[in-house]
Length: 324
Image (cartoon, rainbow, N blue to C red; front, top):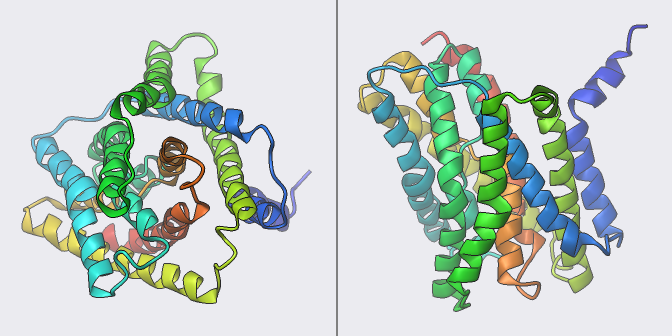
């Protein structure tokens, strides 16, 4: 029996619809009493799934893979943050915007795994380099993002966080599941392929719960009470401007580095995109470490706005980049 086109569209966009749904539920006052236990468990499940995705296949080798990898990581964790802070300083929002911490963490998030590789392939870029860059970026982000959060909180808000407990929680909640997931996929044990097949929908489902728990906690504390049209407009303008600035800067700097077309395409998608799948659990982990009195769903909003914008722009550019 043939499915209706409307049903097919709903199936394709179920995560977006689910995202709107869980935020609406939180805004109407629904909450989960077990979120204090389920959120850390969900973070572990996501990184177990991410490890299985990373263990899929091996990257092709080539003469310039080191240069491409260095370029992508430099943009992910150094140049993107510099450009973000510069934009916020120029607009007068640094230290003034309620989303400042969220913008800061967005700047240090790793590149996407699925979409960067898929768009690189669609634009006939070097897929092996994209695989290598995405896996390396996400592995580094496990440590870089919490470190960036600690630095910001210590300098801007003067909150002290004990480093040893933080490192232990990173190892238990993030690194260990990541290693287990990667090992399971590489060993190709019975049932592993079936688990890997449900990794993406499982990750998306857990992401929705983490977002719901974060928003419901912020609604209960009154932190979202003053979020109005002006705040939404700020998010749209800053995230949109940041995406355009980074995309242009990444494309032309990749050209200046002398990359061939296929390498340039891979570098572009991996250096300009930020991972929602890794970003939400890592930011959720950071909010758990900071404590409930400082945790806010406002920190998640920049990545929630940036992610669909980058997918739209990346998709629109595929036919143009493939013809370069």
